[in-house]
Length: 221
Figure 1: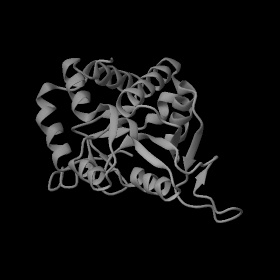
Figure 2 (figure 1 turned 90 degrees about the vertical axis):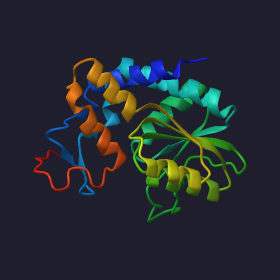
Figure 3 (figure 1 turned 120 degrees about the horizontal axis):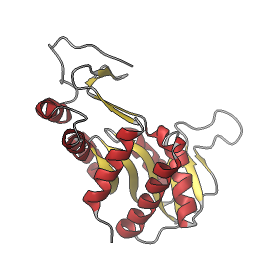
Figure 4 (figure 1 turned 180 degrees about the vertical axis):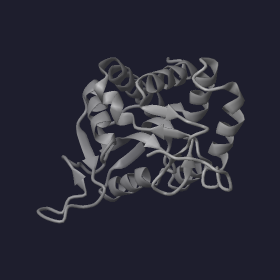
């Protein structure tokens, strides 16, 4: 049995340490959507750090076994979920498939790559959950192909209420190793951010589309 809170904080520590996550509450980033954000997350960077990569692989595999039970195959979501999914499949000794962002425009026109066996129980791997939209498109593609989706596992979530609503509507369970709340708690405790910034950071998660509106904010990409 693993201690969920310990894992949340350890993953948060790793992501900050290797700069897979950057926090800039007073100099926000601008997302492609136009939202202002105090956080930038690129979990692909974990792949370049063997210690971090190994920890994430092991904890995802452990969480899948404990939360979803026996599964037949692991599926990655293109593109960032593919390498993480391969690592987890290797850890569990399971077959691996992945879901493309869109079907091929040539050849077989496949949307799912790899050997798909109807009726198999699958867990989907993603690197990051924001609203869950792209992840759930992959879930629906797998269901349409005749697989039984046990759930989805990811490294990190921003903790948006919209994501919970979307996953609930799709009747898909999901878990993450860490989350935005654990991240800012760790960052404040270890003086990565000022404790006075906690209120500002907390407000972003509650209303990300409106956060920063009407304020003079600089941005980075």
